[in-house]
Amino acid sequence: MKYKKLLINFFKKPVFAQIILLILLVGVISLFKPLFNFPNNSTPEMATLFINFETEKRFFEGEAVKGMTILDALNMAVSVGKIKLNYTIDESGDVDVMEIDGYTNGMGGKYFTFYLNSKKIATKNLNREVVQNKDKVEIRNE
Image (cartoon, rainbow, N blue to C red; front, top):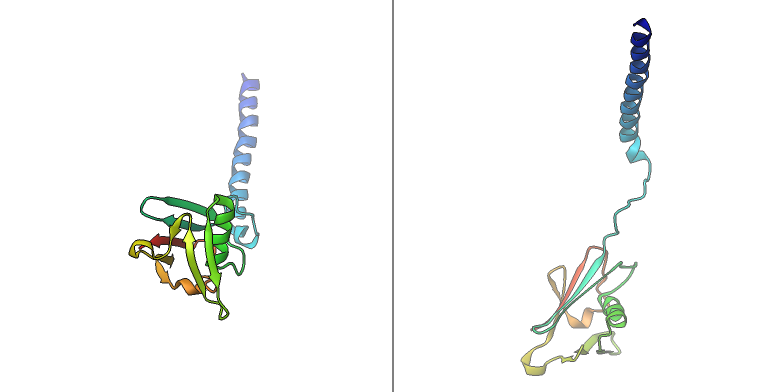
C-alpha cells in the first residue's frame, strides 16, 4: 500500500512543477514579446482597386509598393485582369483617361470618377496620388 502511495506522490510533484514552470514561461514570453520582432503570420494589408460601373463590377487586390500611384495600380490591374485601358499624359504631366474596359469617358454624359478612400481625386492627378497598403481606390462611371 505504501508503494502505491509513494508512486502517486512521486508523479504528482513533477506534474505540478511542470504546470508552474509552463505558467511562468508563458508569463515571461508575454512580458518580453514586444521586445522581440516576431513575424506576423497573418496576410499583409493590401490595397484594393474597385471598378464599379453600372453593368460591371471588378475587384483587384495587391500589396502597394513604395511610391505606387493610382495610375500604377490601375496599370497593374490592367495587366492582371485583361482590362483595356487607354489614357494619355500631356506635357504638364496631367492624365486623361479615355477608355476603361470598353467604357468610353464622356459617353452618354457619364465620366470616370476616381476615389481614394472615399475622397474624390481629379483624373489629371492619377499619376501623383500615392497608394498605400489598406487604401481603397474606386472607379465609377458617373
